[in-house]
Amino acid sequence: MLSERIQIISSEFGIDISKVKDLKDLENLRLKYLSRNGIIPLLFEDLKSASKEEKPLLGKSLNELRNYATNQFDSLKENLEISSSAKEDKIDLTLPGIIKTLGSKHLLTQTLDEIKSIFKGLGFSILEGPELESDYNNFEALNFPGDHPARDMQDTFFINKEFLLRTHTSPVQIRVMSSQKPPVRAIMPGRVYRNEAVSSRSYCMFHQVEGLYVDTDVTFAELKGTLVSFAQQFYGEGLNYRFRPSYFPFTEPSAEMDITCYLCHGKGCKVCKQTGWLEILGCGMVDPNVFGYVNYDSEKYTGYAFGMGIERTAMLKYGITDIRVFFENDIRFLKQF
Image (cartoon, rainbow, N blue to C red; front, side, top):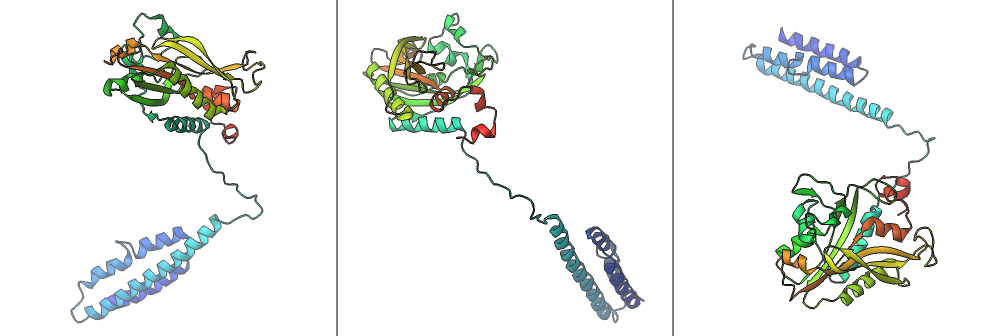
């Protein structure tokens, strides 16, 4: 009879649960008694064939059995899980404590943030462009004709005949001037790529900040004043500086800006090659030919541009002699900054 089976199963469940030693045993017990095809759910199927007079009493007994088994199972499961967790999480008080370290911004990010902050204070906005660039924007529109020898100054990663990984951030100038009428006053930071042998002084990928100012009556004196103000804020008030004539296809006249060597203070050393000076950036007045590519009236507008390498800038400021340390993720180096 069903009533007798209920009593027998209740007794058997009590014996089986007393033998459970771990969570694996407990799961086997659940499968045997409480799963969909377990013993207790199958008893409810048998209840359907009982007479109407017996059903209320048998139903009550079955519910009591199910509740009893479920409560016993849940209680034992909780105890076993606590016991298991305690074993896994047991703290060995003889072990040394774990020192938690906080991360920080990479030195290049810190340097770029400082540069951005200075130029924002000088009235420059911040713009960006794609790293996959067209040959037109990267070279031709910047006054590098297809047969121009200046193209050999930059070993390029070409994707195909039309596209390449940009070799400088100058093509952002072309994108900005092609879509915006003067005045334009912005800096353009980003990654650039050159097919160069990796050494202590060069890397195949690095970062630049390009600057551009175009308006009516912009002069070379304004360019010098802007860059001197930047250098004094970034490197310190006490530095000496100079501008030397140079050559860039997209500026005329062009110059390079030097500051006093941070190590020898102008006396001459290995880092400055005994000159007492360190180059920090290139600059110049935007060549009228470049204005022709972006439909700016070179009779009406003038402008200046400048560019600097973030790695080189950080190396000069912090006395770092090997560019590779920026990309090696050595925590001993990174945590110094």
